[in-house]
Length: 154
Image (cartoon, rainbow, N blue to C red):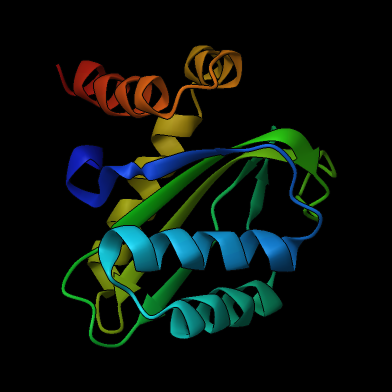
């Protein structure tokens, strides 16, 4: 699995200010609708339901909200860089500024887990995160994310 297969260039955005986790999930669902053709209400509700099970803020300013949706034909991603970090109830209690949302088909157990592991591995690199935080151009952010994974595979 490769990031460029689940993350489209148009699904990478920089948001100046997000006021709440609920607003963030709404933004993720809006982008998933616009870029991947997902149902915005379904995507939003699925993100909320998953987050109710426990926070998806993994630490170091990174959150990996994810959800499963019926009718989806493959894993789809949305990456957001927040210009103002958001309190996310992360494990380390640090606010979040890098968000990678994943949407997977309802029955995609292993595929969903592989996608989460891929994104987690990619964003575990402090140098990569520094590059993401230093840029505000979505096309550069997309390139940093997808090339980083290609470099790891080589």
